Image (cartoon, rainbow, N blue to C red; front, side, top):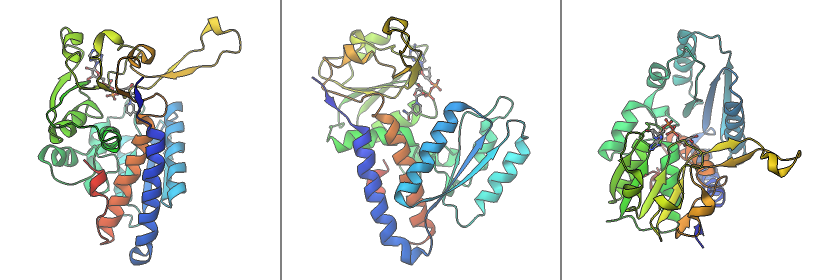
Length: 302
Ligand code: NAD
């Protein structure tokens, strides 16, 4: 039976720590940390994610400033808003919620965010800092995975790690972080031949392919650590009758992997809550920096 790598539990612990750090620095800083959340258009899932992030801010004492622009907005109007947030002294972190409506190119807009206020850690400068091992905001999802592995004292040095997925959001920074922790890392992607023979060598397997229930027992080395980054909503199963509800699942066929792996992240309740927690870590760390406070969160930023 695999150990459950409980992201919900760890995210709650991280929030408690952040709350204490904010309380400790508030008098010297003279203001709360601030996160600006910029949403464009009406993507439904984005609406839920934004609401979750704002709730998390409220729980720990981060002020959240929401801007919701219509899908018809022009790139230059979004740019104006980002530039206004860049110089807003209440704001330590800026988050541009993705995906953007079709017709808006995220590249130049992400690049316009002040790298010192880059709550998502996706700015080119911050990806470069990660590559070079320099401190800075880190991509939230892979940073959350690293925090989960560290919390469970999972050794990475000298281990064979395989990351499925090479996106800038997840796969690439994940591979860099595992490598920085001295794992030997391979990155698989949609053009990889014979994926199973690669993943079967993995002591640590991180799956971020964005394909619901793609990875089952035949891909997994017995005793390995398996992290499921994927998140998908499946339609109700008609076999469960007319009252069946939609369900969440990951990129794993978890029921097959669970008996084989030594540790596994659940979906939901694994990587998802850690992504939000790391957004808060990035924001509070920026606040400490902007306000000249001691930088006490380095251990949480891989
Ligand atoms: P993406 O679509 O940008 O990238 C998917 C990657 O997987 C690509 O590099 C592609 O080459 C690779 N891939 C696709 N099919 C493959 C296959 N058959 N074999 C091997 N590789 C394959 O997706 P993303 O933004 O990196 O996100 C990946 C998943 O993680 C999605 O399900 C997404 O919803 C989820 N996600 C979850 C969180 C969270 O907080 N839990 C955060 C970000 C992303």
